[in-house]
Image (cartoon, rainbow, N blue to C red; front, side, top):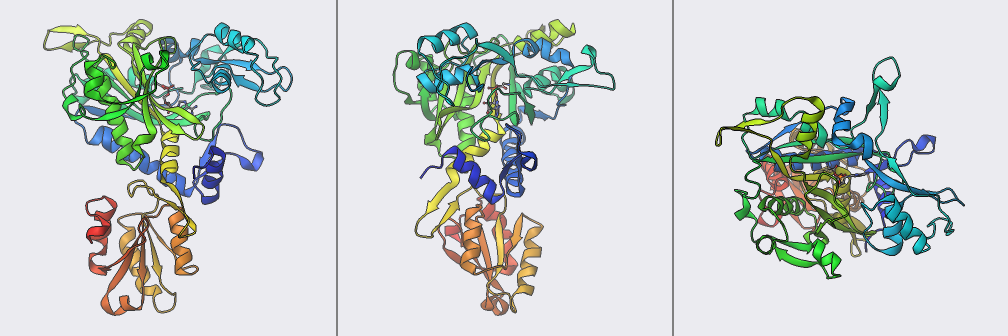
Amino acid sequence: MTLTIDEMATFCKKKGFVYPSSELYGGIAGFFDYGPLGADLKENLKRSWWQFHVHEREDIVGIDGSIIAHPKIWQASGHAECFGDVMVECKKCHERLRADVLIEDTLKIQADGLSAEDLQKLIIENKVGCPKCKANDFTDAKAFNLMFTTNVGPIENEESKAYLRAETAQIIFSAFKNVFETSRMKLPFGIAQMGKAFRNEIAPRNFLFRCREFEQMEIEYFIHPDDTNNCPFIEEVMDYSMLVYSSDMQLNKKEPKEMKIKELLENGVIKTQWHGYWLAKEHQWFVSLGANGSKFRIRQHLPDEKSHYALDTWDLEYEFPFGWKELQGMANRTDFDLQQHMKHSKKDLSIFDEGTQKKIVPHVVAEPSQGVDRAFLVFMYDAYEEDKERGNIVLKLSNKLAPIKAIVCPLIKKDLSELSREVYDVLKTEMHVQYDQAGSIGKRYARADEIGIPYGITIDHDSLEKKDVTIRDRDSTEQKRVKISELKDVMKKLISYEIKFEDL
Ligand code: GAP
């Protein structure tokens, strides 16, 4: 059974993963607090992303830029002027709606990127009604800027006005020269960043999917402008296949199709090897952490959907219960951003190319731009299972993501607590474990299953004599005995998938 998004929000709250922010004061739409389990799960997710995209690669370095930056950055990037969505307001119930989302939900067509005039025309021609009160009388569609503003310093005026960043990407561009000059990187190379972003969304909804404060994990991948195609890693992914929904398929009303990267490049569906490579890598990252690969597809933006800066854009999409939705955007931004920042700052952001002995402005061939909160939702959905035999939920999170790796349980409190505490003390220095002696052992296992704890370590009377414990595997419920002297090492290897439970 798949949970609706509201049911998922309820589950997350009940178990301590995510709560609506400021509930004490009636809540604030589009903001959330990650609870004790959610904070750890999110941290593990981000650490895995950083490991996969930065630490395991020689061609990517990471930064952690500021959230508030010089306002000129946002003027140069175009955000200050035109980063927005088109809004309509229902004249009867005053519900404010994103016009493209209203069209997409009602008419089931792609409407992202359409102008205010086109959206308004579609609403009138199709007599689109308000989802709340059903009236079909809206105000004129008008653009609404999503940038949150703030004030820097003690005096509040136009000069002190600043923005909360709407994407982490621009900080990568504005720090580009510093990173290049201090990191000894050579083209092609990437700069990665994870962190908060803020958008004053007109209609935040679908729980973590569209919030006003969220996190991004982004990479700007820079290449030589005269060599925009050749990716030295392409062979790694040539035979990798994904469900593909190209712009051509969408326009010609064809169904998405499973295709290999090799086919996509040979047929010119994906224009550059780099784009193909990064789309496959991003899909691989999700699958490597336990996501169900068959619920993903890559969808190319339609010509009138692309952002002003993009040559070609593909989204990695996931089939949520509320439809196929963008998980990650991946635009070919060319040299748009660096050129804009050169123009506005009047500083030279070109670099010296030793091959041609010329100054060049690198191109961003692909920008894998992932929302942390959307990834969080995907892993929760793909882990959630209702086990009828057990009579409880089993959250089959990957060992790497699981917020707590094991519970340590004395079978009964009497006589076994001391040894159990010793076991717990040994393990806690290596991983996040929980000591649990409350309730029957069955109840403790069920509680652990529901919050995704992969292993249960039980100390019984035999343990006192034999100096061993049982390890219970969450997914199979099988149990194996392991010597206490070997437990820390075995658990380390299980959690990192160096060994499998079946092989114990
Ligand atoms: N630098 C490019 C960029 O920011 P985007 O498509 O606007 O592109 C990238 O955003 C990703 O950030 C999205 O694919 C999504 O995962 C996440 N994201 C964007 N807006 C969001 C929101 N309001 N709430 C949650 N995640 C969001």
